[in-house]
Amino acid sequence: MHSSEWFSIIVLAAGLLMGTLGRNAIRKVGVALLIIGAAGLAWSLFQRDGASEAGNCNISGPNGTINSSCNTTINPIVHDPNGLYQGEEKVGRIQDPSIDEPHNLAKFKFAVFTAFPDPNKPLEYAGLLLNCDDVPKPMPNTFVGTLSASVLGFNCRIVGHK
Image (cartoon, rainbow, N blue to C red; front, side, top):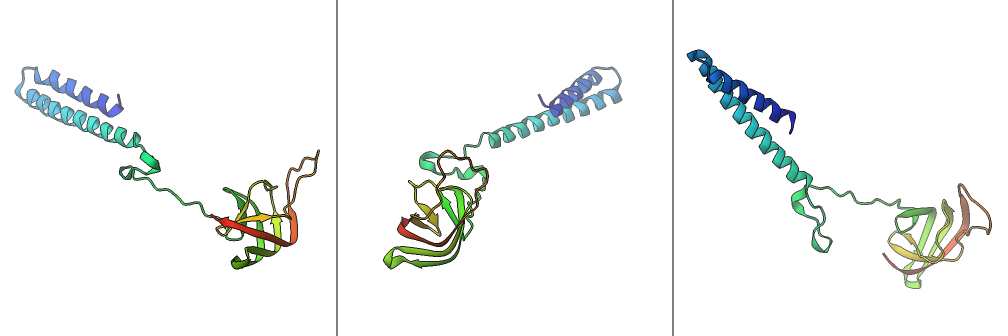
């Protein structure tokens, strides 16, 4: 029980007690307290039901749809326009892109990597899926705590669109 419900029950009990006493003025106060306590209890129960409905809101519906009765805001993921990604992980940043889609080529004057990309997955840039040969690779038997690898003249093949 919530504190508002306990308060309403105490007011109801006081009203019931005062309503049974002999004096007319005390009875009137007791009846008023009964009405106020009953209204407060009904209000607190009504508020709790509404809150529990909102708390049990199912955000995902069938087939990945969103239940519109939930009042849920979904913030889109914003990518850095000059970022190189694999999935949602930013692995680097490029400078001065030159995209030649008819020939499936993407050339960048400069690329800086902050993580080793997975060589078995394409890189993503501006909605393009890229296969790049010059990505930095970890050296065997070494540990890299922080990576900052630069590639001058970074060239990739466009292998699809995201």
